[in-house]
Length: 416
Ligand code: ASP
Image (cartoon, rainbow, N blue to C red; front, side):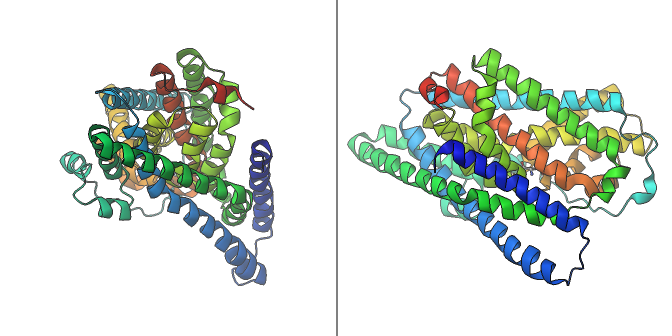
């Protein structure tokens, strides 16, 4: 199927799923009704789950082979290090901008003023690991275990080491590099095969999600909901396009058009991790970022760069503080910027985790963790939306770094 048709069909799958799901929701069916049991929880749920499983299946092989291939094709000492520093720097910078926007706008909107606390349910926070342990955990002891557990940072470290060793191993290395290059192309082909069934997969996911989406909680939390959406939109429509236009020197509209299928995947799966194969494919084959940069920056971003999550955490902190009538001081706000950056780094790219790591931010500024229970009711839809921002942020940084490193193919970006 040609690409523009495929993009259109994926979008269509999403919209039809959304409409059908909402209609089923409006019918307020019994959980034991035939339609619920056999169609929603049956056919559509199976379709959606198989689709997500197939996406996840590709993550480890794809990241591993493309990164080994990418690292082994980078000539020159220090190249990888420079790309890494630029990527991490930009990731941190965009996340910090995201939180500052969130704190600023949330203080203007005042989402928690006059909130009725009676709706609170219980929430138990998990303990987070220490910083020391987090650093140690980046380094793998067993590559197979790292892959079995989809531990992305450990896979990245192992793949880069292997790639660098390949560049230093003379003729042996050259043979292996060619093999990894071949593997890379084959695994990318798998991604394309999956993309062809995506319209159906996305449709199934959307029907199941929206037929169960509770909209009743939104009315209570409408200011919070709108505030998060608004900040997400500002970051999405202002920060990223500015980086693409003024730092990368590219047309943001072309960038967004080419990212369209990725955004639909992120929205319907709520997972930057599951979307990773599609993000990588789009960044390389649609935007023109060379594999050497994309294979490193995109998996890294899907693991540590979550601007959308940081935005939700910023707004949620202000909301909870207002709902509990607690004042946050200036140093408190600085603490929020710092901890929300760390919390979003520690958020795994799977649905709903941003809400769990929010506990870290709340604890640091002395707010009650139970506050999270207040916003759980509307988090599903916000999760879908912030995941879109999370993956677009990764693609933006990859594009900016690729342009500055001369690892960018303009012809691909300009092509239809
Ligand atoms: N669902 C988000 C993601 O995968 C993480 C979160 O904020 O919960 O990017």
